[in-house]
Image (cartoon, rainbow, N blue to C red; front, side, top):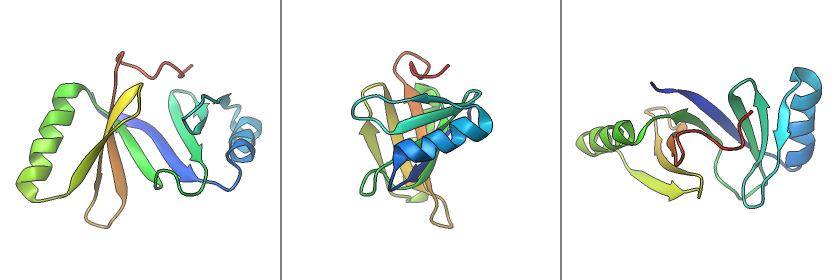
Length: 116
């Protein structure tokens, strides 16, 4: 079943941004080389990346079959998309009609291994 997985934001200081969420919401902060600084509030992640990284976006978790169906629907609608291999997951990026960037993300092992 699809659900919100994460919200990703650019930050001049990703560690400080994650620490803010830790102080206010009791978020669990996880840092992994090559990935944004994550602040998990329950099972939802806030991803903070340095300027010039991935654009701000909302990630929706889907399984591989659903990601393939979304890709087909995007093609049928003439909507541009691209995929990115994150190592632990594959993300399908596209924009909604208002220009917001979305990511349909599928984790290799079924779940984000960094998640609490």
